[in-house]
Structure formats: C-alpha cells, structure tokens
Length: 119
Image (cartoon, one colour):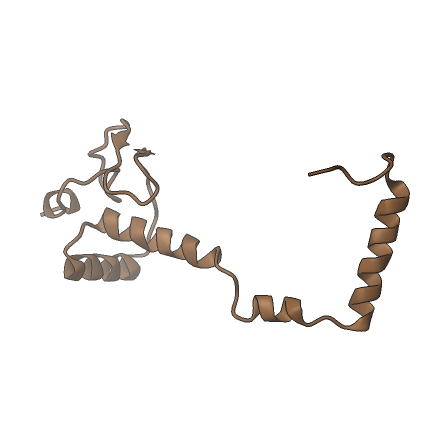
C-alpha cells in the first residue's frame, strides 16, 4: 500500500503523492488562518521520513499536518526573545550613556524643524 492510501486526505498536499493534482486546496484548522495550501514537494531522506511517519501516526495525524505543525513551532520559536535579552539591555555602562548622548546631539543638530513634533 502506497503513502497516498495509508494517509487520510488533509488540507494541502501530502508529501510524496500527487493528490493535489496541481490545484490549490483550502487549508483547514490552521494557526495561520484560512490560507491557500498549494501542493508542495520535498526531498526527505528515508530514515527521517520513517521517523516523521512514526511520530505522526503516534499523534494520530497525517504526515502533512505533523510537518506543518513542526514548521510552525520552529518559526514561532525563532521569533521569541532569547533568554536574558532584556536583562542585558538594562545593563548600561558609562560608555553606552556617552554613545547615546552623542547620537542625540547628532540628531538634534541635523533637524530642520525648530523642535520635535508634537504627539
């Protein structure tokens, strides 16, 4: 039995088959909203694909849904602030203070208005 027969039909293209037939399929249950999900082709090494299938089956979802969720998580993780980012910003030394003052002086001297705009 091929991949197409084992996996349930889901939104978007299941990797490794051509059920999409080149047509866009409406995505469902998607954290990104209702987006068009065009068919996609990826080349995944067989050992990795076997593990993807095993984990997707364990979670009771299709290969496509599992890969979409993994990609969404990876993108979300990369948009978070790294640990200690804000704490490092709060650490200011005299050199930083002087650099900011110099920048302010430079900006003020280059202004063409009489003063800052009213907000």
